[in-house]
Structures are given as structure tokens and as C-alpha cells.
Image 1 (tube, rainbow, N blue to C red):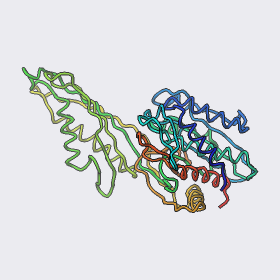
Image 2 (cartoon, rainbow, N blue to C red):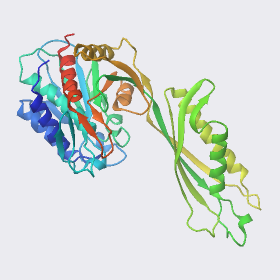
Image 3 (cartoon, rainbow, N blue to C red):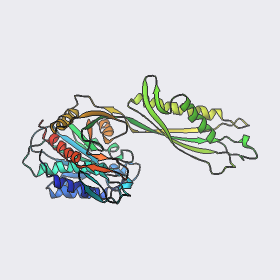
Image 4 (tube, rainbow, N blue to C red):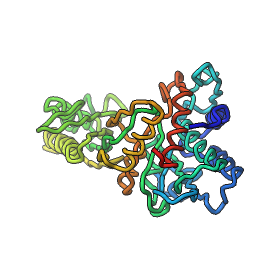
Length: 390
């Protein structure tokens, strides 16, 4: 599969240098649109949705969606990647060192996660547009706000994409690792209300919110619901990540906020973990009493960040990705991811997408690098799947 490798490398380096952390994807989306328009894609085939108006935080733009009609009948192929980077990548200065690219400014990350994915599908589209190759209808989708909870894909209206027959999602990692499923994650917010009293004069008249939290967390740990969870044949993980409360040592703590999470590849198991947290905090609130018999209270809420999924082995997307990776002489390996990817929400929207890496290494750190051979192969895989000739 021939591509202009130097032009592809120049493209990814240019895109990595453009700032665009979550909610600030305006400049990077403009750069993508500019390349597509220069290649002859009509303005009417390029649109932004309004996902950013429904996200937790306001954004500059919505998801960027591009339609390319194709030059032969065939399955409609979705190629997707997320536009945003984590904040540490702002100010990146990409330089090439042999088979890798890194940031010349050692205080920044590279932003290959996920400008590598953006450049891979953009390169594939541009190569096809300028060639006489035959390829299927394409839909390109560049998601916003992936790094802060998959917000772009979560708030996507799948009707805007139209019918999709198979899909590849490009993100971090090696190109021959095919993510065919991923865990689901649910976030918990637990507000504990106690009763203030003077800690030196009448501590017994207070209800310490910190004591309630401590008892609940200790019971979750003791009963095997905190950390790596294996209960009744189900498996998952949970974590208490934030505890915030109190303003003075001489006041019995009246309020406390706990933020926690639960994950599992099994939706029912994830729900069981969340319910164990709910029960533990409710029981602890009943246990801690003032000298007058006053007890505390708990307000418990949870939000699904992304549900778990597993693609069947005979999914069109799995078969296409496997064949394309194999055609390049690489050994495809199907894996289940321990974290969420945009494919979690695509699956919820009725689209079965395989996620592949583009050669990103040590993402979200100042040591981040992009392996150029992996990146170029990601460009080729996107083209092979678009051509649908294996």
C-alpha cells in the first residue's frame, strides 16, 4: 500500500503543534477542514454537530463530521478519532528523531494522543481523494472532549452519521492491537451531612461526617468491594478518589463529599458494586449518632460514564480490521480495554467499532513519543478498509 510517507509525517507533526485541549478544539478542527477543502471536499459535505452544547463543560465546537461519497458501491465505512489532547500537550514542539517523534520542549507532552489518529484518517482520505483507487463511501468523525469523559461521542446524535456498516476508531497504542471490547465505568458522588458541634466542649453533640465516611470505606474494603473486586463470580474494580470536607479542627465535621468510581466488563457487576457503595454509606450514616440520637444523612448519586461492550468475532468491523492488519504482514491481537474509548459510546449508538492505535507511546506524559512505522501503517490500514479489498 503506497502512500506519500514524508507528507504524512509532515502532516502529523503540523497537527501535533496546534494547541487543542479538551473544550478548545476550534483551531485543530479548522486545520482539518482546511486540508479537506483544499483536497476538493465540498463545504456541504463538512459539518459540525451540536454535541458541545450538551457536554458537561462548554466547548468551542462540536464533533466534526465529513462525508466522502466513494468511487464504488460498498459498505459505508466510519473512520473516527478524537481531536482533543490533555493539557500537558499544549505548547508541544514536535521534532523527529529517527523512527520516533517527540516534543523538543521536554516540559510538554507530544499530543500524539490523539493527533496521530486524526492525521491517520485524514491522510487516508486525502490519499484516496487524489488517486484513481476505488473505495467505499466514507464518513469521517472527529470527536471533541474525549479526554474528559468521552463527551463528544457520548453526545453524538447517530442520525447525523447515517447508516454505518463497519467502523474503525483510531486512538492510542500499537497498530496491531485491536480493541474489540472495553470496560464500563460509573462515577459516584456521595454527599454526607452530619451535625456540627464544638469539638472541645461538646463533641458528643455532633455527628461527624468524616466518621460516617470512614466507617463506610472501611466496610467496603473489609467486605471486598473496594479495589479489585471479585464477588459471586463477577469481577470489577472500584476506587475512592476524592474526599473533601471540614474547615476547622475544633468543629465536628458537618459535611463531607466523597467521589468514587466503579468499573467492570459486566454491566450487572458494575451495578452491584455501585449498590454496595450505596448500602455501605447508608448503613454508616445510621450507625453514627449524637448524644441526642441524631444521625447523619447521605445523598448518593451516580452517573454512567460509558457502558461496557464486546464485539462478536464475526463483526464486519473486526473482520475488516483483522484482514487489513494481516495484509501489512503484522499479527493482529484482539484485546479488551480496561478504560473507556469512544467506541464504548459508538456501540451504545448502534455502531460496532474496532479501536486501533497509531504508534503512541507513554501518552499523557512528557515522555510521549510517536512511532512513525506504526503511524504510517495506521494510515495504510484506514485506506485498506476503505477500499475493502482483502
